[in-house]
Amino acid sequence: MKQDQPLLTKNAITLLKELIATPSFSSEEQQTATIIEKWFASYGIPCKREVNNVYAFNKFFDKSKPSILLNSHHDTVKPNSAYTKDPFLPQIEDGKLYGLGSNDAGGPLVSLIATFTYFYEVENLNHNLILVASAEEESSGAYGLNSMLDQLPKIEVAIVGEPTLMQLAIAEKGLVVFDGVVHGTPSHAAHPNQNNAIYKCIEVLQWFKEFSFEKVSEVLGEVKVTVTQINAGSQHNVVPAKVDLVIDVRVNDCYQNDEIVAILHKEAPCELIPRSIRLNSSSIPKEHPLVQSGIALGRGTYGSPTLSDQSILYCPSLKLGPGDSTRSHSADEFIFVREIEEGIDIYIKLLKGFIIQ
Image (cartoon, rainbow, N blue to C red; front, side, top):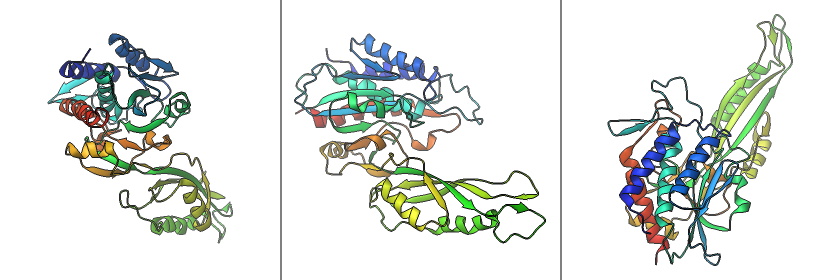
């Protein structure tokens, strides 16, 4: 049965309100997973659940056809102390739907769920559709989308729902986080010390501030290296033996993460240990038919500096969704209702231009 798009959109907004009202911090998404299961049940769509990941296939799934993954996440970060509104009370004011996770990534998630539901019973698609509402995206946890990939058919291309103002993010920076150590000689503060780790750290910080990687991406720009944490010392009269640093490296599509590690191990003036190298940059060619379908709808293309579940996908992927990335993790998070309405409409038109011959 063909779904009524306005009614689907209305129901998607109701679903988002339910998700906002239900705490779903990373690895604690049990209740929101159940809410999403109930959505599919209400439309007679069989779905499966793996831990807190909920997934479904279109009714006329055909193994001989390539598959498109529609993915977004239903976990959230914890609300910060600057909230003035109840983060779990969905309320609409001046066209804005407020609540934790409304923008990141509740709006994109419910829009993709509605889009999948719209196409669920459509016959003769030239691609299969697979919807995964995933967990643990915010924490890059072990039981998120990464744990689902070996249970899914081969994916030809993916749409990852994140707030992009419905512009086409055709590339995304990867991430390597390093723990750094600047070593020195511990001593009493009253005595001379020519190997003070804190003073040595000044030169190390300056090095990171001035260092740049050679290759610059046309879409993603430079690799961005940022010292984000520093810790040393235990009491006022003791020079510490070391200073601990955390370095955040956002990797463009000119490098693999293991290359970044090799270069910094060779060049950096301190000890560096990478936490993980699995969160690589991702991209999709601008010439890809899915991207061209979006461009035909007047959507622009850009490179995204923020990380998503694209980083663990093995296929070309497009990041696209309603909402604005600058609102993510902010106090009194919100998404405009009209953005969800527009998002569902554009998702449907985008896929019609790609999967219906």
